[in-house]
Length: 180
Image (cartoon, rainbow, N blue to C red; front, side, top):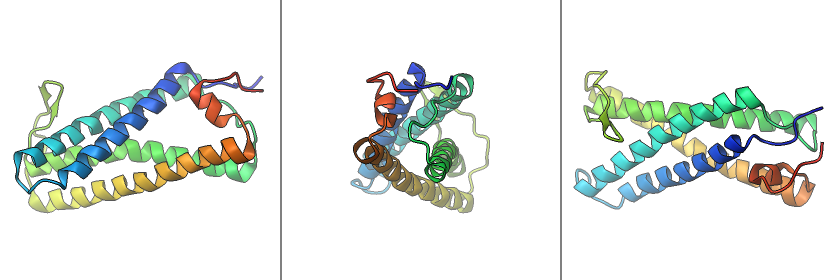
């Protein structure tokens, strides 16, 4: 018998990461409202960094839960769409893990302290303005890619719910027991 429900912790982590990503995007977009070098701008970057670190931790946990408990089989399996959905999910997982790493590298190459709930990361890399710019550009590209993929992910979920009328969205909302 195939699995028909997401594990409750998977559902929690999905929506928790969603909220963290929104918070990280808000913090970094708000940063642009303040002059360079100003205290509020630096605070926005620090807050964005904390959210990024939380995203990394939550995504690592999410992968552990996924490998341990699995995911439900598609309720309306069309091979091409199922393959595209899997590819998009794994690409989003990768970006949500890799983008925070480049964020940490940005702070390291900028020579700035990285705070995480009272802890301070050790300085692992020598400050380097050229490397800082390279990793900043990569981090920004990954973030912009996430905007696109998250939008596509949301549209696909709504399309499945309202057009295809399958249980995918309801299963992630934990609203009903999905059909086998």
